[in-house]
Amino acid sequence: MYIHSMFAITMIKKLTFILLCSFAFASAAKGPQYRSLRVHGMGGAFVAVADNKDALYYNPAGLNLMNRLGNYEENPDMGYMPRKRFEFRLITVSGSLPGNTITDAIDLCGAPSIGKIVKKALFFDFGYFGDAKWCPIYENIIPDDKSDLPDSLQHNQDLANRLTRFDRQPIEIGTQISVLEFAMHNFGLSVWANTSVAPYVDMGIFVPSFGHEPVQVDFAAQTAFAFSPVDKWSVGMGLKAAKRSTLPGYEFYPEYSLDSVNYEKALDTLENRWEDFADDLRKFKDFNFALDFGVLYQITREIRLGTSLRNVFFSKLADESITPNWSIGAMASPMILQSNSWWGRKVNFAMDYVDILDGTVGDMFLAHWNFGAEVEQVVIPFLLKVSLGGGFEGGYYAWNTGVGIGDAVTMRFGSYAEERGVRTGQKEHRFWTGELSVGF
Image (cartoon, rainbow, N blue to C red):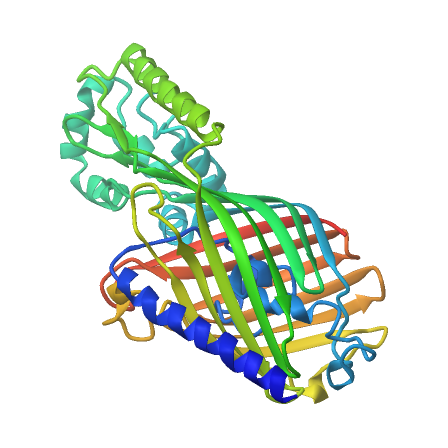
């Protein structure tokens, strides 16, 4: 026992040294981050929970919990938890839309047309060259003769002012796809990528323009392992190969006549830029490597503490120095609320202090604090389970709800927000997200 204790102390000292050294990166950019809807939907408080495949992304030490929770033979004290022997997800796909912008569009144009609004936003077509009936206010402003557009906007000043709520407003669309996610006791691996693109339209009175902000794609392949050096302790370490590609922002201006020929030429130019960008993504070069670290301590069978340090890069990523993400957290799973019978149930409460090394949000109230809870309940044994999570991430509410069909298909829908201002509550950017996962 003495040898094991000394080994644990040595490991903790090494991790502490790494943490202290990481403060040198406090002014750098953020690294790639897998966005799990389960995690964000419970307020982002997951560092000490880390009890499924998502431990690979948020705390690799959690891989040690695989096939221990709910396993009386491996861990009698935690045998009442629903058991998870392993996870193998063939594909997980998620998509996010900007909730604030969509809400404004519903208020302006009406809920029945929201699908058309999103479609036209994706194709930079806001009525200048086509049918404007998708939005009544637009129909009242956009004339049949596009050369009369400036006069029309000046004549309908009230409608034009309402329309400027979308003037150069980025419609941020996020996608994420992961393949070959696998997690078992003390080991996990995955390959994933996420993308963020934000098209916008300038409602210029004289010369309207269209464009998009810089597009970012993060691609990562990672693996991790964990072990338990002494009773109640779990330690994990991961290796990540990552590539970040960025497409500069682009804006084009139709001629004063706003004729469709020039519009099509501009779209062709935009399409060519995207094709070149896609070719660069397919090239296996410019990869950088990073390490992830994690520790869990089981205080009692109901309370667990955790810390993780992620994205410790060996070199710059896309010419940017990356700030390692250091977070600490605590969780509680009250025994009285748990069940691993035919109708298994899991209930977690969690609290995290996140992004400790990120000094850019130091003056933002609650910016580093995440609070959350979740419940997962088996409704039909081996066939159907439901889940519900909620909390506050960085001061903004978050929630998610999910349905699992056996271990084959899991569907989730939820919402969470990020702060885009200099203090909490100044500029909320809310995401509406859906996620579909297939595997066993």
